[in-house]
Image (cartoon, rainbow, N blue to C red; front, top):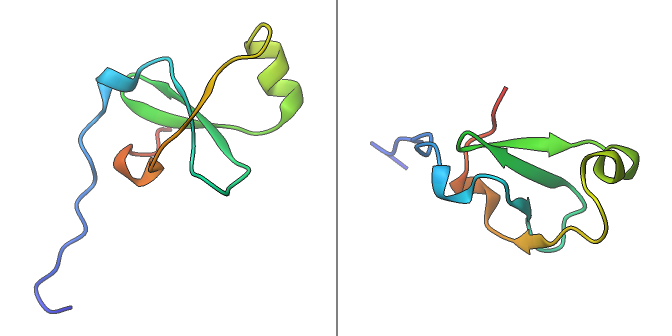
Length: 67
């Protein structure tokens, strides 16, 4: 597409603290300071969160990947 640019989304501080997952994908992300951070495995997930932490289906392309 001529003239198209791929802009990085601004930090999404409104999503801080949420666990997000793209529908149909296994990867889960935690939003911290407006950026998504990958939760690499269930052991990490279980160490970070107590009980059944709610994972929200979300278009993760709307949240920039953090460091």
